[in-house]
Amino acid sequence: NRQASGVRITVNAEDSTRKLRGSIQASGTVSPNPSSPAIVSGSVVNAASFSAQTPVAPGGLISIFGERLSDGIAAGGVPRDTLLNGTLVALGGVALPLLYVSPSQINAIVPYGLPINTALPMVVQRGTSLTVPVSIPIAPAQPAVFTTASSGVGQGHIYVSGTTLAGSGNPARSGDTVVIFCAGLGAVDQRVDAGSPAPVANTLARATVTIGGKDASVAYSGLAPGFTGLYQINAVVPSGVTAAPDSPLVITVAGQKSTTVTVAVAAK
Image 1 (cartoon, one colour):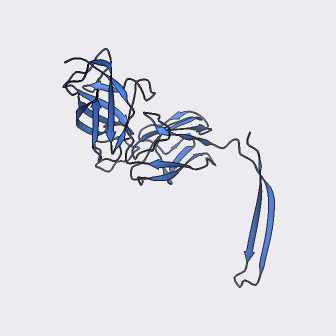
Image 2: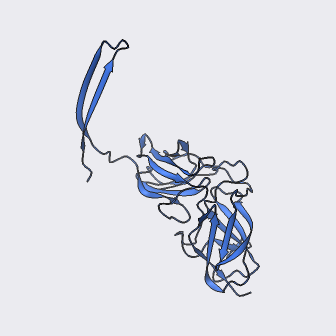
Image 3: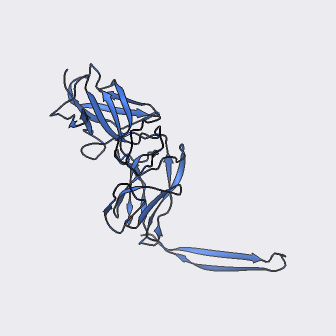
């Protein structure tokens, strides 16, 4: 259990002529407030991969895990508000659009325009209570593919022609265009409000995709139109990929690689 700790405060004062001076000391104890919200160390993560101790990226959908983050469970509408069920999240002093809040988890979108290659303080405010600030590194991109198990591993949310999951029951084939739904691809080529439905907007950093270890041609890398915090990549399955229900797929953006997910590939 956390214990109260001793504190001594000293106040010094003097008038403008510096002829009058005074000093007073007060001692006491400071105890933790068990009702204050708290962010769990290392638990601000990409909402697709859930990889700990990684940076976040402008436009990225993130999950924040902690304690007493909200007085209840609430899901926000579109456009996303920055205050949801009395909970607010600020990163570098900028309020984040919120998708979901609960006592233990918040899903939010990192605004565009934050400075990259730096670290910014994050605080969660629940009512009038604040968390201790947590330093969050900001990278140009931190790509990750959403998975059907919502775990960051296994079958990715990857669709043939954008509508049918490229899983074992409907594998993709060489020459097929697959749509890969992902998060954290970074800045785009037009001004976008991170909490509003997205237009068609291309990522500024070039995205590359490998399927089964082979380079796939990327036709589009950008925001998923109409959604918030969601990106998509349209890529063509290359020839020569070994048929498998769990062919590995990796995205690279701005020098950052996603964790490996899988996609089903059949012989041509």
